[in-house]
Length: 141
Image (cartoon, rainbow, N blue to C red; front, side, top):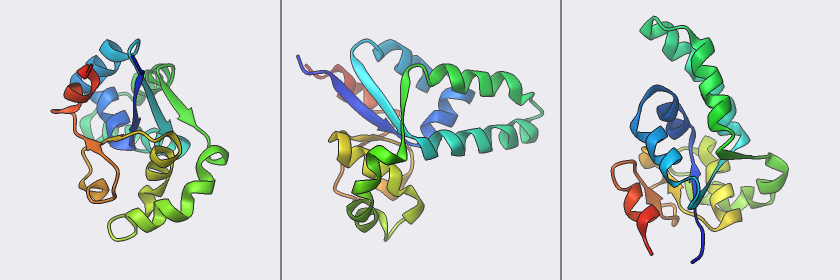
């Protein structure tokens, strides 16, 4: 059986740190599927986690440690690997959020769908899965 894979955007990484469902799914399927995220998504998560913690009155240290632990399961993809896909990625996402092009570029590079809650990826020509449906993809035989 071919190993499944998904490209995660920054909001999924943040949800893995603050919620239970996303982290449970990642941990449950880590032996059956590969998870990837562009370097920019990890940087965005590192930037937003302290802000969210401040807003919620939480200490960010533990949450940032969680993000690093998640990085042991979700493979960080460096820009040098996906930058050649920047032009077509920008073309696909330009009408929505051009800053999301790295996620699209990694999806094009690896030929994988995107796990997101962000509707900006819908209509990009790349399959997208939301958290409430992603296990349908991960369980496929």
